[in-house]
Image 1 (tube, one colour):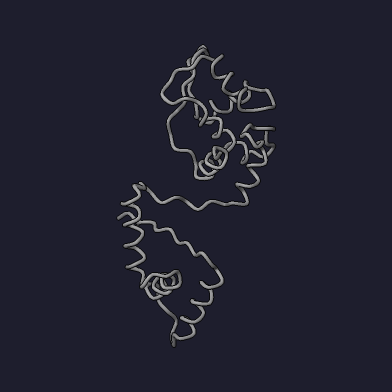
Image 2 (cartoon, rainbow, N blue to C red):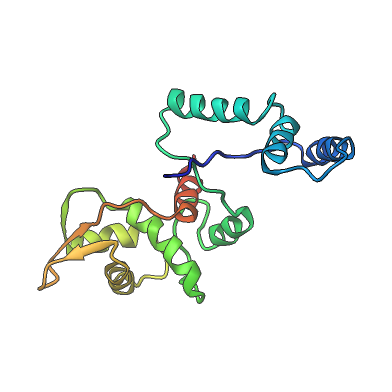
Length: 178
């Protein structure tokens, strides 16, 4: 049985805490799982958990969302964005391995989908979108991380179509804003 994931968002964490505190204070026993779900749902404005769940399902259907977005660490996103200038060009190679991949996904998003590109075309796209002028490093890293494929002779490249991790998606969206 697959478990559905429903996003939980509280616009004001202080009122959430106040509501939960009041509900827990009025309870003469330790609430069970379902009771806690209902308390959390009421704290964010739903009648109960079933209402909260129905709202999430309806939103998903109406807005055409295939899946619920994973939570984003905005502090990490802010740190990653510092590698880019105001125009979205990558400024310097991150020393931390964990920072390199989300930044590479930004460049991956600039490559046209379902298109064979020559090495020269890939270099032009990479040079247009980064400032430390090392397209060979970027091509190699994208190849090793299976973001692109290339022919054995290295003449032709193709972007691998797959969904970037949620942090990389958030970074791509942030940098593509006008």
